Length: 217
Image (cartoon, rainbow, N blue to C red):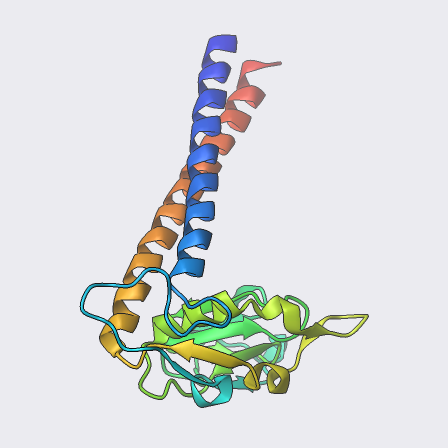
């Protein structure tokens, strides 16, 4: 019994370490693939791209808008995700926005970013990007992740996010959509690896819990 559980503990520790390392590595890459304060180009750049990044207010790059009211009693089961501040809250038979989209929590869970491929309904507890101005949507998702919207929260009770405060933020971004796509591809690959190890970790933890319940009276 001890040997089996020790083996599982070792596997859990291994995947936990891999997961932690990937999270740290992704954070490092996010810092290095976007310009540091006072600089107009990132530390890491793909070959063939030399132009300085452009600087604009965020409202001119990817503006935010409050989501739409949808009371729970009016939700009709369907295929379109209802994006709430902490993730998908339900599936509705109608949508308000065609995908892909970028959504973040406006009230309650602040700065919880979500990327949506399909058409969706952004709930009124969220803010969603209304225009991408020709920018790659997934790049905008990572741009917002780099900004870290949690620092804009206000209110002593339920924290809220004021889009006007965010819109005035000056951001750098590459004019080349191809460069945006390459940056997004690297960070998406790392996110996929992180998710993979997270799922393996959860699976192993569930297996161990199940065995503990069955191996002891």
